[in-house]
Image 1 (cartoon, helix red, strand yellow):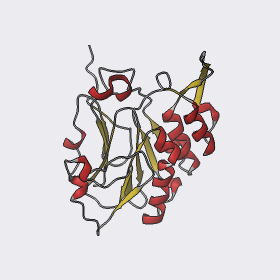
Image 2 (cartoon, rainbow, N blue to C red):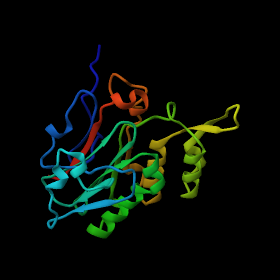
Image 3 (tube, rainbow, N blue to C red):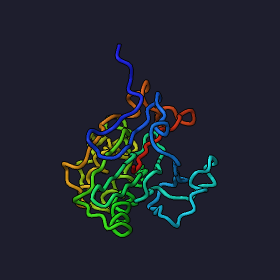
Image 4 (cartoon, rainbow, N blue to C red):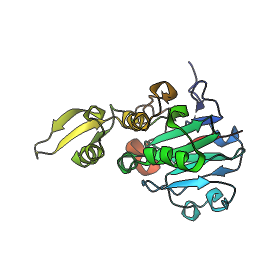
Length: 235
């Protein structure tokens, strides 16, 4: 029987990166220090540059870390990391200017447009051009397992996301309509809408809920769920 992958990586991405499963430690194969945030499902992007005091970003205590959902840098030798357990981890790399990003995007983050905010921050801070960027969209809750209510579809519609990120709508006896939501597709659409070419986007297409032997899932395991790190570095 084939053993599950310890880490998932995109082919030919051009800079060190990985997505953890239950069976691998991503920070053991990427350079340190590892910088993290206190993730809050918002749209705050933190720029890590030569003037940044990185001590709090390395804190073991989550509450000590700065609040936000994306990190960007052009500094080599450090790792940017986000943690997920159903939300979408997105890693970005602009090889033309030497810049990277790590983004945490649940449905609230998608609605808050954290993915476009990270791309825009790379343009402002480092002169990145979206057409030069590459992106990897990691494992997340899949479209067969993520049924959501109208509050999600309404907020997605308000920011222009296409209706095809939803399918299999159902209306219950109380008149509430729910639908299956494809978060990975939503993040991919936002990347393309920012100008990153389809050929530069790799979608893992793995469902954290449906593969319990491989992935942690908050939706499946609630408070017993662990977290998985997605990380990227420049060398």
